[in-house]
Image (cartoon, rainbow, N blue to C red; front, side, top):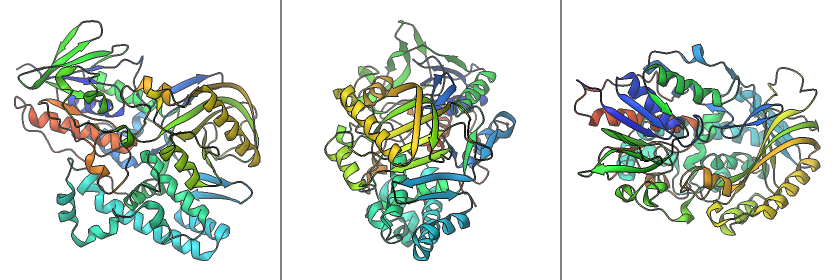
Length: 506
């Protein structure tokens, strides 16, 4: 019997995970991507100091990846060198102190006590416990499950569902734990990991804090190593990975996906197609008229945050950078009002800076080093905003805040990317980097699931359930593979995936 043919459109993390699991199960998998290599948003930018991670910079919820490798008969540590970080991140407020969060929660509580007093340290302990409880309530019931509805999830949670606090904002809920505005700002920032504003996102997103507080790992050689590793494992199981190969259309017949037509005119027939791209590209007709009705439309106002990023080769001095450092704005509410209400770059942005060459175990680099800087931005790249002048003003504001914090940067090389660049790189998004924003209690339930309205057309990636972030995207790829195999009736019954405890960090 011939192998089932599956085409995966997009070699980002979700597509690579799906391709690996399908190839491991004996499917004939072809992965096509317009880019010149694997990774999608998990990309690198070359500098004279070496490649800079220009997308995700950390790995959290390692158990998700341990389970993935285990499911294909591999061990994660045999392929990648992961190092746990002692300092999760350093946080700075101009003239108002710094705070490190540690892998050891006791040290974090002590540091918070030193910064803001014992009551705030107690608030942190309660917040950490509650964020873990929310995570554990939603782990198997929502994040690892096929896309559940609100009513079904509420029924499975029962009275325990009150703990996830979906009907109040994260910012409001943080007031129950912290009176110090710096700490509300720090823990409110976790909403941005889903491309959302802490003033509009539900308190449920405190689970994101647990994912990071439970441990952060760096990958030797950069995050892109993970993409290359998965691509290599898939190829070793027979998957055909074709880069520089844009897709013009997904083809259908009798209401089902039947393959793809490439920009070159070549057609690849398939028994199933997985789209690992932003789902909005479908209803915008960017993958052909046959599949434009595969998912519901979403308004531009629902888009998640975009960003302006700088990949630098620079000599840093003055401020003691950790591997991950956040320099907070003076007025968080004004910052997000500028982005989400006014649709412009903030006058005083919060800056995330990744110093990729700093391990925390040795002295800082003596010369130029690799730095990645990011500020949040509106997802209006398809409208030509912000323009070059706005980005230049934002860079000036960023450098002013860094200087006020004591950090000096002697920059020898820079590559700047903004919403317009991301809109071109990720079609249909307008530059949004996380699909739709998680604003309001129902936002997570509006994300598309694995299946679409077109038979044998499936979705994976950060714009679909369970959402953005490397662990969630990996789970979306696993769910896509599982669903494809369940639907391809020519195959033997799909074996239950080994999860090694799922995503629980207990």
